[in-house]
Length: 113
Image 1 (cartoon, rainbow, N blue to C red):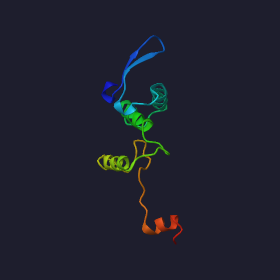
Image 2 (cartoon, rainbow, N blue to C red):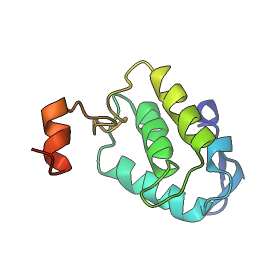
Image 3 (tube, rainbow, N blue to C red):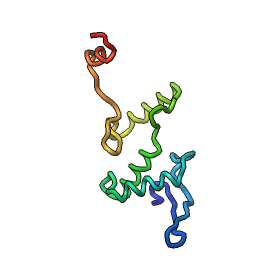
């Protein structure tokens, strides 16, 4: 899995030693994230191959979550990065990353119609 940033070796019968992780996983609980990624793979994963599934799962489990405050420059950079992706309208699992709302829909949301 070194091609997606993980370096993991067997360490006995039921253990592994993690030697390297993707930079995007800095500051997260690696043990918990690896369990989540492996669980998702065991359930079939989301990609066309196991490597795609690992990459999608790793990206998902290290993404910015709800209620995580961002500064204005961080928000702008996030949108800029999103615009440079091949499929900006959905995450790796197919969930939408943006919604199209008409002026009328927006006004209804703010009780202006």
